[in-house]
Length: 173
Image (cartoon, rainbow, N blue to C red; front, side, top):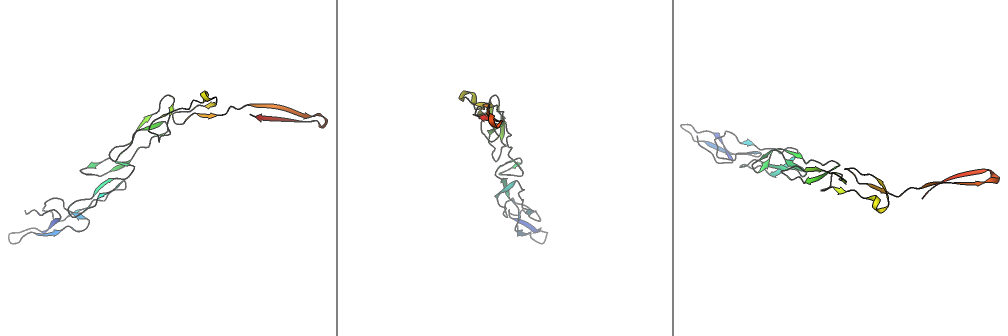
């Protein structure tokens, strides 16, 4: 069998009395090595989590790469056949390692008196409200402590005896 150069296929193989007839690979087809194929291979279509890194030509297949925010789960030589969306860290976790085109995001857990909403690259310490004389609504691993003003309530009785009307006022200071 006679091998044809890449980018071509055998339209008709040789016989005792004829030579091999070759034809070029047409649009959306290719051969990437010397061959004796009777047709060119179909170009790969990148799936929905991938984009074209290098377009198909008569001598090479399409190369795909992950979309922004995705990483390759099925690498091949110089490209990718499948990808997944980067993991999103949950509240109470921080981004320990940012995802790349070839690796997923790695999340870590906040511990002790720290928190993260899931978008931070490290856990933050809770605000210490008591140090600045404010009321504390305790935080958790996913949100900060909430500091607020101290609330005082009191009752004042005011009256107008001739009218026999009594009012009760509640004041906030």
